[in-house]
Amino acid sequence: MKAGSTIFLLYPAWLIGAVMLVFAAAEKQPDNFYTLLRWVCCAVFAYSAVTSFQMKRMVWLCIFAALAALFNPIFPLPLSRGVWTVADWFSIGAMVIAGFVFWKSSKT
Figure (cartoon, rainbow, N blue to C red):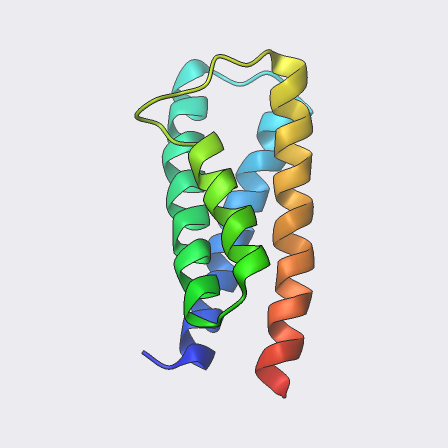
């Protein structure tokens, strides 16, 4: 798969993850939502880490690998709601910034 098409697939994944994270951060959701959120975000961040590795973007690889580990559904971290809210907003910010950085690098 070409780098351009790989990046193109990241944007819808980031959008889905970001929307779910906004809902998680904005108000209390049912437990099933958080389970689904972990699966979706872990997959999105793992895919983002692999793409970052393919693009030789090691800083982004580390960021996305850490986020994938944070949201992993197999060994969930028992964090407070306040900490999760900060993690949710940080994750959204990381995806937005990465979107601009990756878009710019795909143009050159």
